[in-house]
Length: 84
Image (cartoon, rainbow, N blue to C red; front, side):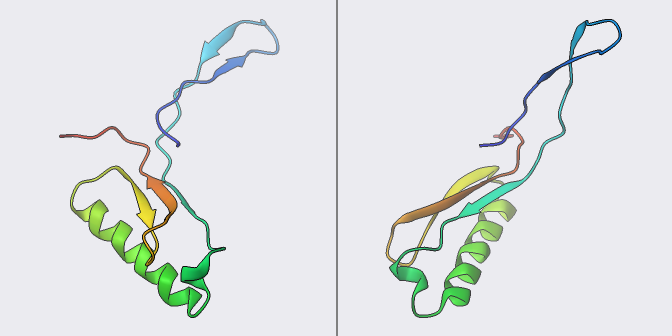
């Protein structure tokens, strides 16, 4: 998952490396190629997004997503560390 990372970049003139602090990035991944998405894929996707929104409001910074059949189909991550 995406989080705080510090990649290095090399100055083309001096050849020196320096760390670059990246801003947090929100990431979301949902795989939609299973049975829970067959009947009404938009409804299942909306359900998963609503669940993620509920968890985000509750203070979570990352979580997995389970379809209506209980299968893990994705995850989301705010790119921040938990405050709790």
